[in-house]
Amino acid sequence: MNKLKSDINEIEGVYRFKIDIPFEVKSVCIYLFKIGEKRILIDAGLNFGDWPKLFFSALNKKQITLKNIDYCVVSHSHVDHIGLIKKFKRKNPNIKILMHEIARDLMKWQTNVNNYEAVENAANDVAQQMIKFGVNEKQGKRIVKFFITWSKMIRYHEPDEVLNDNDEIFFDTNKLKIIWTPGHALGHICVFDEKKRYLFSGDHILSRITPHIGNFIVNPELNKKYEKYDFNNILKLYLESLDRIDKLNPKIIFPAHQEVIYNPHERIKDIKKHHSQRLFEISSLIKNNPMTPLKISKIHFGENLDEMNTFMALSEVVSHLIYLEELDKVKRMEKNGKILFFS
Ligand SMILES: [Zn+2]
Image (cartoon, rainbow, N blue to C red; front, side, top):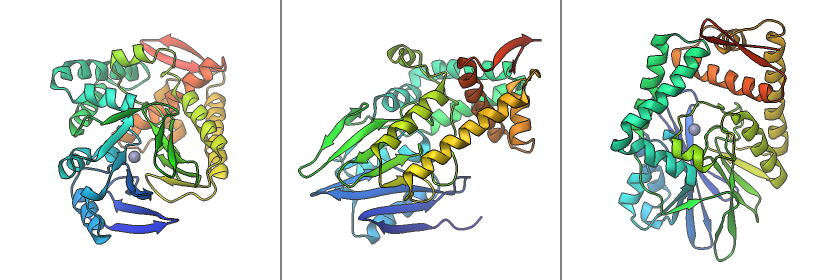
């Protein structure tokens, strides 16, 4: 394996700590900037292998220690964005950890040992659904295992404040606006500096790939609390979140992976186009030709995916099918215990 690299850049007054990871997205970025005297970190990286060491030594190179940092705003609850919150808190008990209420609720639930059975049940529900959508029993079991392992990888620390949509964090000279952007994760937020028109987008908007949409386990209380949102139709929520970001008219987007985006409006347009093409291709494929979502996914994304990516591709297809179903453009039927979609 190649040695992992860290790369620190200053981009328009924002430090970017870009550190390699041995996975598909290739690197994870943490951003650091100042408003007045306060230092703010966006995201908390990955607690895996050499990543923490590389991050702290990169910080050192800039003569900054954790003690000099006032806030860490977490974009969402995935392990490559929350990895070091516990370590940050240990190194600086005064740092304020901020995250969306849903990110807090989900992680708190997933990491509480008393809830392991409930987490397993929720994972089972997802697996049962995926079995209906085409995967076999054995793959279903591995889906359950994936969610349980994932939950156990979370090093959770209670946030100092929870954030909600449209919240503002005030500083002497400026403020940061929080935009709730469900899609890639339910508790996903973007952070907007209105004065500079910088947007820190987490995984909501990336420069080269479209973020994965779908695939969650949810605690039952959360569903109740957010009852007026249809978390099932996650693609719809994602596309609406994209429009909200577009309306803010950001000048630069700083994403948590890949490259900084200098043409936000164009990039958002491209991502929307990508999804409408996928919607069109999926509904054309099943015209008078009912198929399970797994079969659709294999035709659409190819057969040669590893198990993890097969599951991601499947949940991506399902999010598009549910979106189309709600628009009455596709229908579902049941045959031999499997669900087939057609248009
Ligand atoms: Zn990520």
